[in-house]
Length: 419
Ligand code: UD1
Image (cartoon, rainbow, N blue to C red; front, side, top):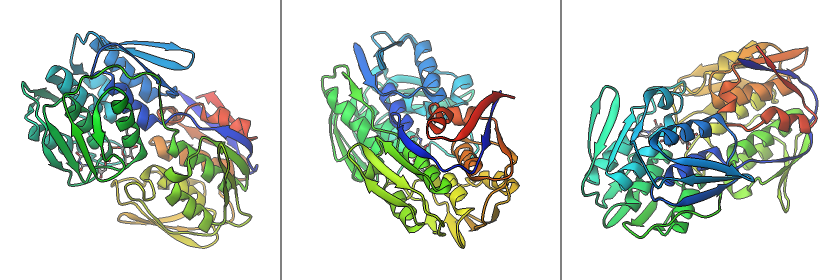
């Protein structure tokens, strides 16, 4: 196992480039199951989660090649339609294979994702939608076995706008006979990125980015050629908060204003100076961070995937802030670790009250999930009084590409060491 050592208290300075979005890469790679031939995707980040989906698909017979930063994927032959427990348990997003497999083969067997550190996270809405499209499913030995001979379009209403649910059903609908209408669908930029890729493969999709998506299924599909993934807005937001918490001045290349409007508004209220530049955003941290309340929401609201990082910022703000988590239950597990660094936080149901203090204190802490680990790194970059040790950084490697190297290039004192 590895850990991160951080000596905090240095303002970040310089330019950093954001990688392609993990949450766009996963559905894009899954979408290559829809039709044979060589697909190519650009800007795929090197992450553990990407490795996991590649491993599952390799077992199915899919071939991956990487050339000059382009991932080439061939699914001419799908020998198996099983996503095994050992791999699915490490990444819930493996459920994204269900839609395209059902569309291509009319068969799929996916290990049922279990609970995870940030809550129960059911997949009932994915399954309900597939059932409406004529898919028969039964649970056997922990696997969702799906079978359909005549996949048909349907009018589907999602009780909650689900991101991977919308993506999964969009992919299934591409292979279905007739029209599918998805209502109350997720509006996240990663959903639109998948729609853009599917359109480049010949699919007919309209309305992505709104809450009603219409898919005209059963078109002739061809491989996606050179699909360039949207930049990672969560990585961008993490760097923005890092600049704010260290009083830094950094340029974030690839950071898209329109994908982070809610975060920008909150960071400005906290005192950060943010300027739109040709290649991305410039973020200067304030001398004194002001406290701001946030509430997580589906896009375009404040993303739950940046809640933990924003909380680290509020730990050193002037005054108290209220942070409400409305998307996932149990998404405050970073709180007890932040408290080890001197943070003053109390939790009341889905609300955390954070009372700011001058500085955090360096301490050994343990990462518990992907975004929680990012918040501990940010806390470490601010902390005074020695070296912060963040253990279990494998959580971080699921979703951030070479994060310590990027922070080092901005002048941070951060090292990855065994232990
Ligand atoms: C995706 C993102 C994740 C992000 C989340 C919310 C990927 C790979 N992951 O996760 O990083 O934190 O969106 O922005 O893109 N729900 C149900 N039943 C379902 C599906 C979802 O009740 O069948 C609920 C969830 O428990 C949660 C809410 O809907 O409360 C939203 O979850 P969802 O958008 O599905 O999250 P993911 O797609 O798993």
